[in-house]
Length: 279
Ligand SMILES: NC(=O)c1ccc[n+]([C@@H]2O[C@H](COP(=O)([O-])OP(=O)(O)OC[C@H]3O[C@@H](n4cnc5c(N)ncnc54)[C@H](O)[C@@H]3O)[C@@H](O)[C@H]2O)c1
Image (cartoon, rainbow, N blue to C red; front, side, top):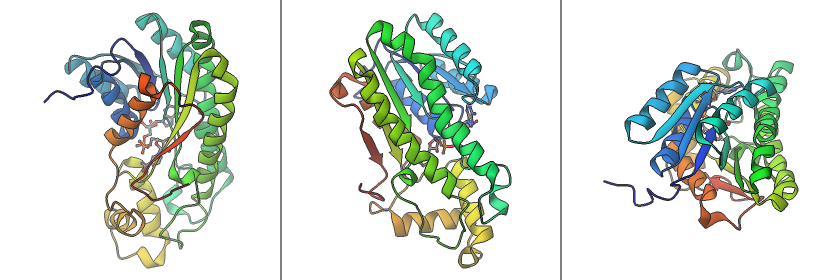
């Protein structure tokens, strides 16, 4: 069946970072399905290529490539390529994110490396991604920048309190992503560039597989549960709607913010979390 909103982004072009899997993949597929051309990039070039192939196979239009958002040069090069392939870019989704440094599941408490990598990707990565596209959008006096934060950026998370402090750098970096969105929206309003942020709740992606494994290994109360059971318990206890979100749920929220229906919305943080946080 045709998606009833299928023409919503006809004629638009988008960049999505970290789009090789998980939420980024879901966002790229929804944007492609709604008629946008999509430049799919990721640290994992093969995954990005596979997502672009999925979009092209479904009669969409996509290109793919490697882009490391922690490197200004890398994201600038990919952005320049996307602009030249599609003539213009209307939508930029800064989705790439990390939960922490290598060895996350094996420790209860954060290390310097957790602070460095979460700030490098989840904060500086958003800044690098926006800075790569702002000159182009400002010149065209049109643009939609959509950042991906987390409900963890709204309030420290956790049904499981026995897991230690290892999740703190992630939550703090995601709060910074919200503040970055507010500041950028004020700065770019005069160019008709809307900047918003989506705060997903809990989705069973490789990121939550890592979190669940950490809880399973580090919280004695959760030791008898498998990682998937840990996740399901979080959903049962923490989510009023009683179910996890899907990458497509996040993609539909992004598509709305990228559409003309959202032209008067800027500087906002949109929760897509089944009710876990209401601020
Ligand atoms: N899964 C959840 O429940 C959840 C909840 C709230 C927010 N989020 C956020 O949504 C976004 C996507 O999360 P996910 O669950 O799909 O995670 P994921 O780990 O499944 O996927 C993240 C993707 O980002 C890519 N990436 C990592 N570092 C990168 C870099 N330096 N440059 C470019 N790409 C890089 C990875 O290669 C991967 O493809 C993240 O920002 C995450 O913080 C996820």
